[in-house]
Length: 487
Image 1 (cartoon, helix red, strand yellow):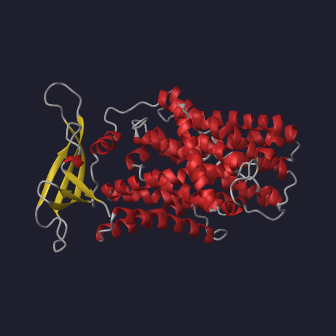
Image 2 (cartoon, helix red, strand yellow):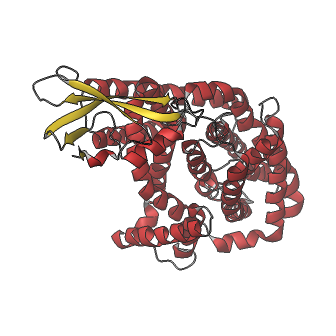
Image 3 (tube, rainbow, N blue to C red):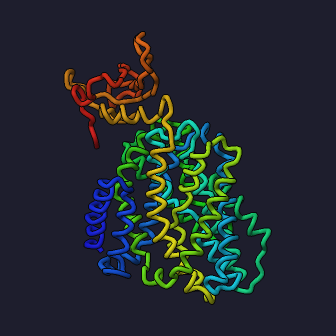
């Protein structure tokens, strides 16, 4: 398995670099590499690696959803809340309905089998959509209207809604009694309990980090451990209490950001580094799940069903954004962002076949084909349209991230060494602000105020000597006079 892991890292990174060079999303290259090295083409990855593929993909998805949570702000969520809910329901219903109508004549499926297929195809892929939306959010693209936040939140809710429908339809195939009202009620219950669990865990972690002086890497590990434990609780309660763990994972990041923004930024920056590795695992292993031989069997008829479903989904997405305040081009961007399919289809595409559904083999073939057709095309479409359609705000929040990166500034909780005095200090507070230009009519510039405490093991932070320094784009790099003391 170690050799397979090394292969994923090296070949995945190479594909990422090559695709970025030609201005395409790196994840497309990783997906294609996964297909090629997977068991259905070159069969390079070891059976042990494929056996733990599901766990690796789940951990990688947790990393990106945590990062998403650390980017969610309350005011933006308030603006996009209703639109996110409508986007999580209406497009999926449109797609499921049209696939249910189109699949019987084109694929020879029964009406129930076609509905099951529609519920599998009806889910958007957070693995593809969320990283791209986070990239836009970090660069301030579409920040004024909260468009990336809207799509990010809606794509997560969409999966909960669609998976519940899939569970209901699969239960109907078994011939057993299905309580439709209860299944419908599990959707809001799952969402609410997942978010509540995440908020509670996030608040406990915030209190823990406020009371004990953990080093930044330890905070990140603790948050990841808590998020993974939440997904374990979801599995433990399956069939007893509905709980959406992935929404809870995002809520963990959200509440820490609300309560202690400085700590949230530190954890988010560490997760960004973890994501470099997690991204390789996620997309290469998702690609490795794709059986192109099965997809080939779906043929033109399967392609026609997928296209019909996407057309209906696009209409539903556009209509769900009525009253959202988005213009025509922005609605089209949201429509394109709802095209990619990968995560859910790879996870549940084979479930009907295993359950003995008569059309299970056809359902699996179309599900796999949908990944091949929509994941690369959707990712490329999001990248191209996002750069052209999304506008930057007048005072984008990403300016502070650029400033921090350009000057290599430390974060709250980190210790620094001042070379000129030979003393160790600790950053105990940071504040982002805008400094007005000195009377020449220029635009305000971003500034970061850092408060330092002269480090002493005998004193509590804040007691003793402190000083505050302001850093702007014209400041010298931090490492010219200081050194960050990493553990």
